[in-house]
Image 1 (cartoon, rainbow, N blue to C red):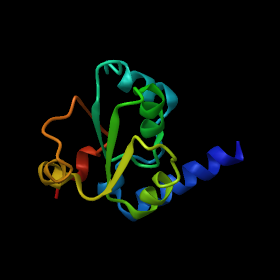
Image 2: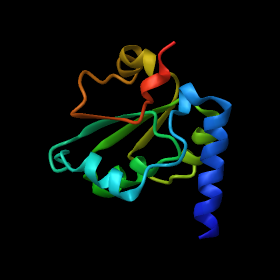
Image 3: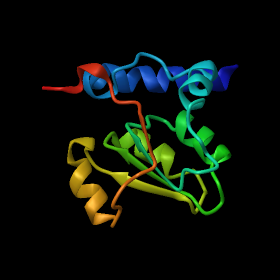
Length: 128
């Protein structure tokens, strides 16, 4: 319980620092994660791109469902969230600390012609 409270407070602090970048007051619930990932065909998806992963709730859930030969490219700009994402030990995870606005250049730099699936946690108010 204390771990959940700390997680929520940590997330809330990031929201307060930059609400246009974080966009949510608290981390996503497991119910939201399940519903958002439901339409993805993990048996076929080889290249998955996650935009705005936050502390990694979706990231971890995607990795659990992915094939061993798939890759998950995670684009996150928040330094605190990047620190937490670096703790995920999975060779299929490629963490890209950059702005999702550069998506085309990022995919080209990673030599990705096309992704099978995009998952976005970007806030609606992230535009300038």
